[in-house]
Structures are given as C-alpha cells and as structure tokens.
Amino acid sequence: MTDIVLQAKHLVKTYSQRSGKFGFGTSLVRALDDVSIELKAGKTLAVVGESGSGKSTLARCLLQLQALDSGEVLFAGQDLAKLDGAALRQVRKNLQMVFQDPFASLNPRMRVGEIVAEGLLIHGLGNATEQQAKVIAMLKRVGLSESDMQKYPHEFSGGQRQRIGIARALVLSPKVVVCDEPVSALDVSIQAQILLLLKELQAEMALSYLFISHDLRVVRHIADDIVVMHQGKVVERGQVEAVYQRPQHPYTQNLLAAIPGKRALSA
Amino acid sequence: MNSFVPLLQLQNINIAPKNAIDRLLVKQVGFSILPGKTTCVVGESGSGKSLTALSIMGLLSKQLRLTGGQVLFNDGESGVQDLTQLDDPSMRKIRGAKIAMIFQEPMTSLNPVLTVGYQIGESLTTHLGLKGAALQSKIASLLSMVGIPENRANSYPDELSGGQRQRVMIAMSIACEPCLLIADEPTTALDVTVQAQILTLLDELKTRMNMGMLFITHDFGVVADIADQVVVMFRGEIVEAGSKQQVLNNPQHPYTKALLACVPDAEGKKPLQPIDYAWLAESKSQTQMQNQEQA
Image (cartoon, rainbow over all chains, first blue to last red; front, top):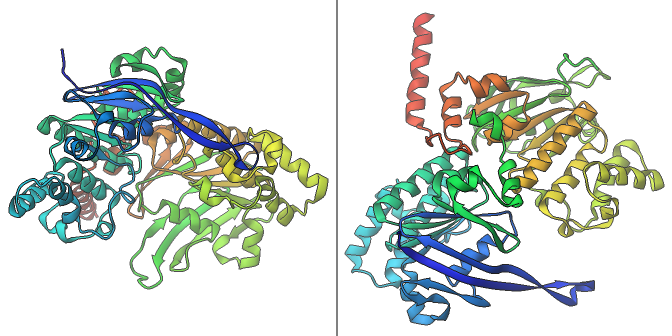
C-alpha cells in the first residue's frame, strides 16, 4: 500500500456573503462541505470542478492560507489546522504552491534570483554561497539560465514566468506541491512543456502533487487519482482511468461530455 | 444570398508597427469566409491572429499600421467594398451593423454602470433607429434568443455569471443581424460546460441567421467542434489552410503537426510533445532550400 503524505478529513469552510436588498442581509456559502482527500506519496491527485466548486478554497485551506471552520489536515503526523507561528512555518517548507497566474504571482520589483532565493532565506537554509548555488541549479533545472537571476519578471514570457514560479516552489525541496491551475493561463504549446517539466521533476524529487484544474484533458495526462468537486462537495473520486471510463455521478458525466473536440480529436 | 460568393476576402494583409515599418507582424495573410460557414484561425499568442481580426474591423491600435492588402467585403447589397479604403463614417455604419465582434473577456468588454438591456439596445438605436416599446421588445427577444430570461434586461453585468455575460455579448453582437461575426477567443475564459453551451449557441445562431463567422482560438478541441475551414498561423504568417477534415486529420505543415501533438487528448493515449522551435526553424529553412533547388 502506498503511503499517504497529506490527508484532509471532513473539511468545512463557509463564507458569509452579503445578500438581500442593498446587501444588508448575510447568507452563508458552503465553499467546502465535508471534504476529505488523501494524497499518496509520489503521486498526483487532481481536483477538478467548475469555478465556484470550491477547488481553490480547498488548496488554500490545506496550506493554512485560509482558516478552516472545522476539519483536520494531517501532514507528517501533525494536524496543520492546530499549528501556528513558527511551528506552521517549519511545516510549510514541505508544502509549496505553484499559482495560476504567472503575471500576478511574482513580485515585479524583485529580481528572479531574489524571488527564488527568498524561501531559502526565510528558512535559513545554508549560507549565502550554498543558497546561490542552489538557486542557480534550480533555475537551470527548470530550463532557465544563470544570467536570468539578474532579470525582473516582466522580462520573461508567460511560460518562462511559470518556470520561475516552479523554481521558487521547488528550491526548498518540498514534499507536497499544490498546483492551482498552473497551465490554464498558458498557450497549448507552452502548456505541454510545463506539464512535462512537472512530471520530470516529480520523478526526480519524489514530489506529491495536488493538481487543481478545470481542464479534463490536462488532468488525464498528469494525474493518477482524481476528485471531482461540485458546489463544495466531493461528488466522485477514484483512479483517473476508472473515472474517465466509467463516470458514475451525472456531474462528472457532464464535465466529460463537455470536453471540446472529444470525438474528432480522439480518433 | 449566393452561398458560394465569399462574404469576406482578405488579400495579402500586412501589418507593421508605425515606427518600424519593415518589421511585419502579420505577413501576406489571405483567406476568405463564406456565408453560413465558420473559419477558424488557430495559433499561439503572438501569431497575429487577433491583429488580423482587428484589421478587418479597422480597429488596429494607433501604433500599428496596415501596410498592404485588401479586405474585400460583400454583403450582397452594396457590392464588393474594400474596407481598408473606407473613411471613418462609412466604416462606423458597417461596424456593429454588418460586421460584429465578440471579445474574450466578457467582464471587461461590458460597461459595469449600464444595464445589459441598455447596452444591447445601443446599437439598435444607432443603426436601426429603434425606440420605446419596439426597442424593448427587440431587446427581450434577443435575450431569449441567447437563453437569458427577459427580465434580466434590467440587471447590471456584475449580477450575471461569466457565461451569462458572454451570452449578453452575443446578444449585443447579433442585435443588428450582421452578416459577419468575428469571435476572438470567446470561450477561453469560461468553464468547459459553459464553453460547450456557448459554442452550441453560436453554431445555432450562425446557421439560423446565415452568418459567416471568423472564430479565433488556440484550442484545437474547439476547432474540431465548430470549424468548417481552418487557417493555421505561425509568427504572423499562414502556414496551412484548408477544410477542418484536411487540417485536423491530415496536417501537412510541420508546425500544424507539432501544434496538434501538444494538445492533450481526453483518452490520455497520446504522449504530449512540446513544440521544438529550433527543429521547426531548421525544417523550414530546409524546405526553402529544396524549393530554391527545384527552381
């Protein structure tokens, strides 16, 4: 049996939303409604669903970027929801995130070298020479060069920026990487490059990915297991093969039927 | 209208920045659109597909210039017109009335402080002079045509979902029953299920109103669903054009093959293959050399 690196149990998160006339009333939105997931070591778990299904909230709650109403997030025997301050920071070294929008997620006023090195500085890993060597090695690994360290994010294309985002996340050698729609803002040709890079890095560094996406074609290529979310609830889960071939829930069937060019391109 | 006479014919379109007139961003682009048919322009960002569309409408940014070519438009009424030669007032009569456009981001292309009904009505008043009850009933019928409840005419854009906003954009664009609809990545910002609905809607409207459609996309899946003709653009030039069956099932140009190979398939059987641009440049220069030798 495969080891489970990250486990979430019965997560609940509600937002209050202004409603009624002039927004004087409030109503509660259940963004996560009793969600449980298990991420296996060295594997990729895809979370799919439409906008508003709660998949990004799930990602943020797993990393404690947002507080949960209730539920447990178990990593290395600890419940992350109960940690705070220094203890949480320690754990975060092992839990990194790659964001959707490579234009918004990199600080425009920092050089690429600084962006990638920041995590090492915060966690005090190694001395200056070691840190620099690590940053250079990481940049080279994701397909950039040493001279790129001196440049600013705006000097790069979307695909290159996403490589910087990946380098920033992986330089700490994390165990779990949460990828929140990492390729949905990219051209299809660049998308293929980034997906292959993520796969290679997973094998080299024994990473476990939680891969959030609304594109079922991408998920088919990168994921081992899949969780389908709809209105804050998990409506279907299983191995990718099984779910794609025999979707049980009507919502999953709808999603699969809506894949563009399904008939024409699969021939 | 004779459905074999092209509605729109682009011939040798060249577009360059004003301050670097020799650096062509779009080079010798030409294709035609038939009434009631959809021509898809496919390419990566920077391939010049949006510029080509904007040049048809005469909406190129002030920093760019159309340095050559003709945009021949034939609506069956006023004969063949070269849109590049028209002055602003005549062009304004065509924009919105004969040729309409839908953009990628439904949120940024709608005015947030006006009701959607008002925004749909604007072009009806401008081009057709509709007012009062006649205007209201036309707005209501347009909304129901795109599948939005008629009472939504008084809603503001922020009260609608992304898919509904794009439906409003479509209602606006078809209000004056244009003969050509230009859609620039209209479903890229939408969820897959909503995307499927919008594509079906556009296809139905195109058939019902016998519109020609120029559909810009980077997604070959969408092409497979909606196109009749396909034009593939790479770095400002057309590298391949033909019917959907030809281009998708039997691509000839190495770039088309490479672009198809990096689209993930739903079965996951096909290995993903990113585009090798260096190899592409090499094979391009090789074919050029072969052509020269043959000549």
